[in-house]
Length: 60
Image (cartoon, rainbow, N blue to C red; front, side, top):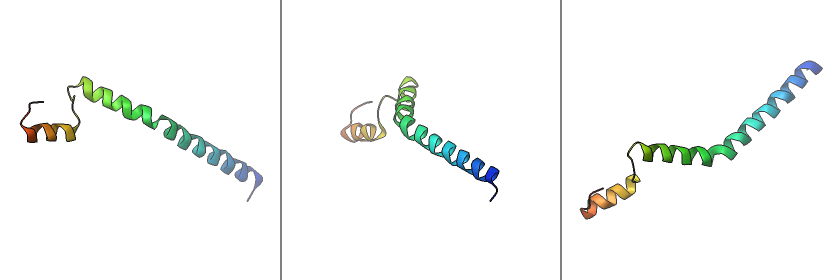
C-alpha cells in the first residue's frame, strides 16, 4: 500500500473514531432534547404511564 493511501486510511480511521465518540457523548443530551420537544408538543405522559392511567380510569 502506498504511503499516501496509508496516511489517508489513518486519517479516515481517526475521523470515524472521533465521530463515534461524539455520538456516544451527545446521545443522552439528544434523548433529553427529544423528550423536551415532545413535552412542548403536548405529549406530557410516557406511553406506559398513559396506559396505566387509562387502565385505572384516570384522565391524562
